[in-house]
Length: 614
Image (cartoon, rainbow, N blue to C red; front, side, top):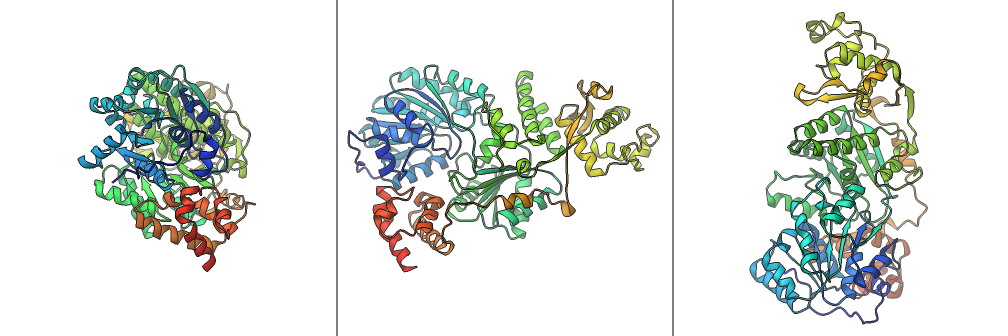
């Protein structure tokens, strides 16, 4: 049964948002604009909230739900997200429920009765269900406190996760004009923000834009060179035993990568839409409930995952846009402690993404938008400057060098690649713009092969003019030429490189070209690894490792008994706070972030007994 106990949580009429934040959720203070947002929505105002993953978006509607009369209706796109949030609210004593396909008729009827009788503080529903005439009639028969539209970027047709059913949500304003609405998302560039406002009729809403910065995440983008082996080194050296997500573009690659990681001692599980429902659910549950699981997945996995202690997100394939990259990497480090966003990137990724755009069914305007978004992502990948500055600039946020990305920790060298660029572009032209990078490199380096001989390319003036650069360097030159817009792959010609209009000034010597110099040491290991490890230390108080392990074991047993994810009991950061301070009394335990009155009453004595016995 999904319905939380109908015993009302004690919320005096004079309760302040801060009082509820402390006593119910166990947090000592608001972060950023949370207090202002809560006050605005509680007083009946509409709001659009842009706040990074892990920034506390949920509290922006959960607190007004407790402060306003009636039930808050939360539109959520995924069942897993509803279940986790309802389970977490149950732990702190809030009356909440969800309506979705996992409920049988009896359970759904019980939830509907509770809504009508005012016995719920929050009700989570999917947009498809909300739009059903019966559901809208039910809402008209109930007292609704507010509407919260989570993952609001799903309304944008230009976004990375468009959901057609979100377009219908403007009906909430039409049928319930006096009920406040709050739309929330972690990912929206200015164009997407405008579309959210337009399509949800939020033209009178206050817009709250928090910093998009996630300073606890370290961004690293490496040049793809035996990507699977690079990934394994990254996991073994920086995240052995940690929970993580590895994103791949295809289902086949997901299966193969997960199977290979298992042979290397990594507790890896695959997840993609091609698996049967039971297997997907089992793997997701293990990821949620066990420590140290690495899920290898397509982008079908993630948006509904509320796990706070994901220590890394890795990409073996290039995402489609900076929005997608930011959304996916944002699933790491939701608890605010150090985490990594790591990606291996090569020319093949660029060719693959551009092919997918060219073959998409959208019109030319749609394809042009996708190409612009891909170009912005390529700019991030090829940047020699701070990754974070480039990332935040995309969302319209100025910043300074972070000191916590690969380019800041170990600044890449740049070189005048004008001569190499002209040779490469000339080779593309002289060979008829019909060949990919592998063959072009053979021609440039003067390598006699069956193909160079067959096509007579060993007799061209460009044959051998690039013998001074090795194969790896030429691969990087061609990749950066594509990223810089001087060449483009033709998917109809199996990735053959062709010249663009921008290449003409380069060929004529009117424009100079500067490129990142890629330095790879023996074995393909990136030179930044040492710098990354050396910069990962923290001056914060460190928990007692043995005590933290015992607390995690206790939490695991408790979570299994209740059939909820472990983090719903307590986040890792809360357990770390306990292990670092070793409180001796309930009052001292109550001072640790994440322990509200309900959890203190439920778990306090057991935790103190565990600490005392250690």
